[in-house]
Figure 1 (tube, rainbow, N blue to C red):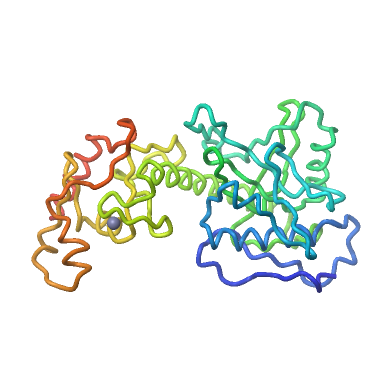
Figure 2 (cartoon, rainbow, N blue to C red):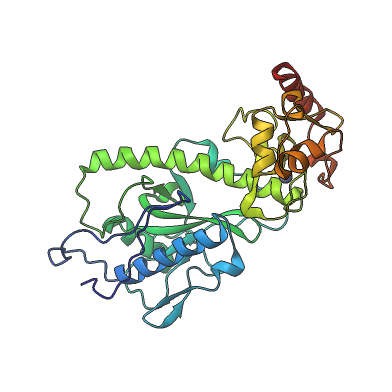
Length: 339
Ligand SMILES: [Zn+2]
């Protein structure tokens, strides 16, 4: 039944989302056939490929390119609609999407604080409307969906597979949960696990996913504030940049605080985290004496020792986004003690 479906299932270097495998055997015994299954598999495989290529946060331009199914290009999502399915899908939806509005650029991420599933608002107020009905059916059949979670205007962190676990007409919302990162994506009806266990697993996975979304939002905001460059060496490839915390993130799911972040390349992030590189409260870079005493090739001489005594080369334009002096002070103290 799935003979024509190409499955990408190599070990993910980026632990983004699980491999997609239709369950063992065929779907012949199913009563609730998800006739849309092959499209879903094609979409999820294509998405996995995009995330490998572009990183875990995708711009709308990338998402809008769509994916290929039987020689045709289908969309993953629709710019204007939250609940989406390509016209070929007959029963359920393919994806849901939340957007961060352009005004009020500080996204709120209220959802990330709770330990429950994501609350996804109905389209309108009628659970039986055309769009909502597709999600209700998705819930009844337990079909895997894609959630394009808005991180900032025009940027989404895709999460898949997610499932609709509840419809709450009183609150006009669905509850959306994420699957365990190592769970196989099985066609509906093929879940071997005990449903109670499955619910627990998904609850746990959802909490983990919310932490990762928070980190993704932090990284996105910090890198943007530093114009996608390392604050020490100006290195410009986002693939090799991290958002480093100046002080350990005390509330993983609070509002991402840009002034507790620094955009650093992998080398300088590693050096900062191990106190080989310190930043004085006035923004001057120091190198640990134990490293200054060593001699080696260009990475040590130019890449690390060369920055001793220099100022951070990039700082955010907005004063509120620059590193907070008290955070730098506390962190610098640790660097000095480590020596
Ligand atoms: Zn650097």
